[in-house]
Length: 471
Image (cartoon, rainbow, N blue to C red):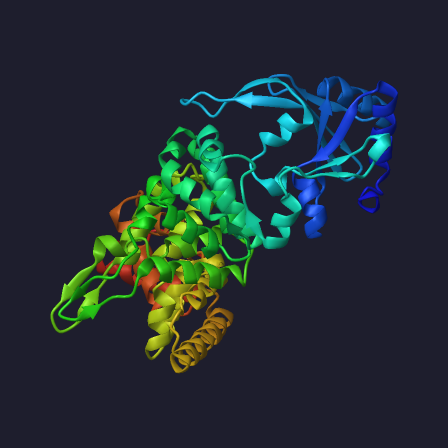
């Protein structure tokens, strides 16, 4: 393992450990990622002794600042492009009502026992007698080769002690493409109710990491199968299943959603576009109807889904800001390009889509492309060709009419000045008439034509021009 410890910081730490007659080990994710050949800049170090004191000594040697967290018994520092965190070896015991352990000083063995998974319990010695030696008491290296997520100790106790480890198991399975050990999977099912003692913020942090993984459906399927999803995200869980009436069934909207999520994940790393994929059909369970002669319908599911987005974001402690509004907008509009792709496209419909989608038009088209999950090759080709046609026509209309991020050529101030009126119903009526005329193509998106229509509409409702407005 010496070849993996070429960075000079390791020899500096080893030298200081020898001088102080202390034992120091690299442990956890950095060691795991060395074997997986994944880039890693965060190094966890366990010290047999006072981790904070040792970190302060190293910081003086490296001439860098150290951040001390006495409540957690840890200290961290930045050196070059690395983040180093030092902690004293410890053993932990838990109470049933909390995931916060009672911590005592311990040995390296104690520290490895408390780790969540065998692949995260491997340590590398930085001590002179065995510098670079691997300490792997739970065969983590073998589990890496088997692509297996397994707990060092009894999984039921491991997950009960700290239920967030259940989410971490799913996250590592999704990120690394590993399987969860059957005994651990069974323990998650049996212990799932314990997740309720974890703060929603911590759960959502792990959930977002699952969503950002290469194939997010891997994690969501495990969350569903273990029953975790139903506890903290029941709206998504409720999309599972197929109902039949008169021999007619609808598709399983849960698995369809996971396919859409995987599809969009292939084309964008953006977390919020991936959330839009997760929530695009979230309104379907509430709008599902069986209509004789038509079969299953989900009329208005995009409107219902858009109304559900703020509540779900609040429930999951996701940000209630422009990110939420983007997701809500994409959920609201996701059917529009699909309908356009199936019909004769009018310039009016394209202008309205550009007006409503604005700067998020490309994101909307990305979502709609991902929403094609049919296995029928002919249908896939047809849909994709139609989408390309819609995209080209959107581009043509945009270049000609400049509707995207549209600002009206006539303002409310112009209308009030022209007719000598105050803000009120008449101003709204005239502005709305001008907007509709431009979107319908009745007049061009220009100030002179808009001014002319403003005067006509004003006179229609009994107003007289008192000030002439310039073009």
